[in-house]
Image (cartoon, rainbow, N blue to C red; front, side, top):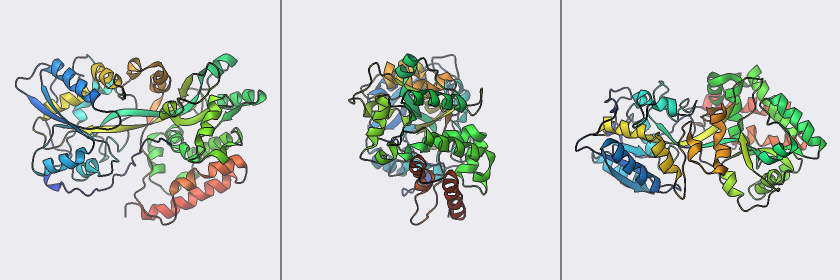
Length: 449
């Protein structure tokens, strides 16, 4: 089962001690250059080699040099932390680093903890090199609203978003088209579609495992009450699950259970989850919560004639209401001790250019930048699932605060595993919600201890 590693909103300290290189997160730093070639300037860019490879970085470095005249000394490695950590401890800092939160050795978390990052907020207002548009205007809406870019909660960007993966409801677009059924934009329209499908022996929902409702749940939190409610819920605030916003979410998920193929719970495990995904490919169920990895995961699976991948953000609670899709992404950052701060910021801005987006997307292992026009650089099968944000959806980012220890309890087993029982009819909505409330009361005193 291929899942994207998700990063909790509260960042944990890691083992590497880089306190000597720290500085105040509010420290002033040079503004990004706004075009024009720089004479005899070279910046050091360090990028971790992931499944996306290094060809994209090489192409972007070359394009940046051609655009600005600034030379790029590129360093890549699969275990970049091993060399980068020792280099920084000896006083040699790269100017730009691409390394996501959530990696095993936690170097990025350590840089956050030690306040050793440069404030990149002014990059957002700067023009993308070679384009007449700002970085802020290029980014997909909502992607900056979490600790994954603003780790101190001070409204500033220290971690620049990179390589996004949207989640949503995946389906066979050809099925709806061939039946003449409209893609639902509200939950009322969703239930109406479910009734039409039921009359033809088709279920409205499937899901790989109940755990796949995590991204679904985060998007629902935003839709129900916006960013403030999301923060309250993910930080386990007292009484948050007794609110009207929470009830909306519980009601929708419980109703989904009644429209779900009853074979799903028995197959919702690490061994058989693809059988639940196959229900969608066979047009036996319409929607399933998933991420773009499902396209590759099921690449060799049989499917209904004319099958065409489609993906939508969650339907709104009412007509014209906000719609969200949870997105996971990586990060790039500039060390506070970087020697060429202005040029480093210019490079970060260039990462959101069409040239950079095309370079990253054109490799044998493509990565996609979180910009509003990203789909024009994608193959057709990716356009169908990455076009969510170009159709008006907002990005839901962040996750539950898991900075607590509670013996014998996995919070996701309380929030999502009972969905299997809701589908099977062995648990009521009230019983499910009561379990969440009880866990909330247990966790709250343990947070950040």
